[in-house]
Structure formats: C-alpha cells, structure tokens
Image 1 (cartoon, rainbow, N blue to C red):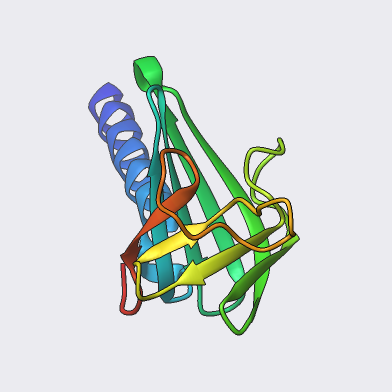
Image 2: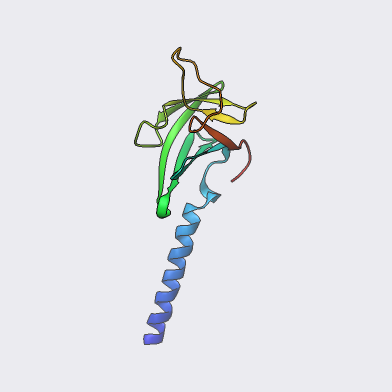
Length: 134
C-alpha cells in the first residue's frame, strides 16, 4: 500500500512539473514578431513583441533577480506605443521608435520631441529577432 502512495506521489509531482513547464513554454503563446535587449551594469531587459499585440518585458538582474511584466502594444509605422505598459516604472517610455536600418529600438527623445537615433549607452534596445517562432 505504501509503495502505491509513494509511486502515486511521484507520478503526480512529475505531471505537475511537466504541466508547469509546458504552460510557461512558447507553445501556447503568439508568434514573436520583434524582440530587443538592453543591457546595463546590473540588469538585462528583454522586450518581446508578439503577433497578437501582447508584449513582455523580462528583467534579469544581479544575483539571479528575475521578473516578468506583461503588456500590450500597437504599431504605428515605426512607432511602438504601449497601451498597457510592460513595467512598473518610467525607465521605458510609453512610446518607442523602431529603426530597422540601425537594428535598434530607441527610447529617448531630444528637446525638440523627436527620437534621438544615435546609439549610446542605455538609450536603445538592440533588435534580437524580427520574425519567426521563439
């Protein structure tokens, strides 16, 4: 009897772990259309834009820090506008500029209200992926 309980507990645990990993995998998510990464001294920010208008901001940091934010966006030409922000601070503005020639997503605007497209530290995401599945 105790062997059946131990076996059943192990089977339940294995099914639980597999189900959790399957739910978190890319299988059930919309196709990635654009992805970019920004690295600073302590954190890596990965923005993932999906075909269905959802986006994710995966933040990885010092000593194993990891946080995921979910949001929504819309594209207007090369402008990315967050309708639901994928973060909880003002580090990333609600409007970004995608520059495919420079392979970057720019964050900052100059004093004239135009996006600054000069690549300097912490002002852009390097485009990692533009089409395809994960």
